[in-house]
Length: 245
Image 1 (cartoon, rainbow, N blue to C red):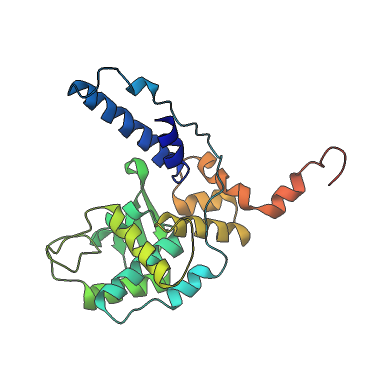
Image 2 (cartoon, one colour):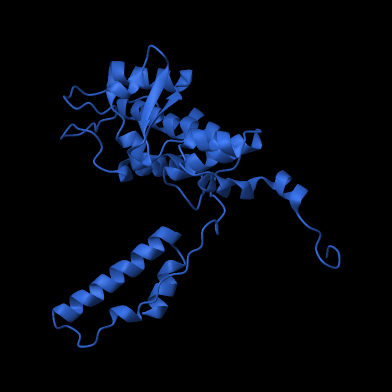
């Protein structure tokens, strides 16, 4: 079991590692309950160590997102829908769940605002960039299927309704990056969120400003991006004992 967990965990994120261990313990308890095994093995599955801020945010190289958006196929209704979704992720750093849960009444066209339901059922508002608003408006006017659902983004195959899960949004990002020939270790929706934060930091935005855009409740969450601010890190770095080698 230890070998199995080590082999699998090497390819997973910290959250997925914890889920793997939990699922394995549940499976072993099920086997014991069904009489398939006679020894309680669940307690033998040790937890996977995970420390806060232990990883560097996974982002795409500078200019990659702009190139992907410029080359995105917008010749079909689905392509135009996906383009609007990609813009929301790339320009506003929305989470996949925030895209899925976006309703028509959350778009304030008169004032150029978008209302978002963040984690913890918190509501915030952000300015709606003109290019993002134009893409969403074009989709709503010409490509959105007729449906009683109030969700902004709908499936284009029966049953016509809003996306059922955040995986749908991550799959759009994954397919888009693959079609563009982007080789990235992370291809889900969150990689665009991380890339936006890193780009904002490189362009002089403060961690507080980045946290406001991303909807972070705690400054500690945004502090993770300080790891990629190499210029600032050089300024506070201490000399290596004995000199550089």
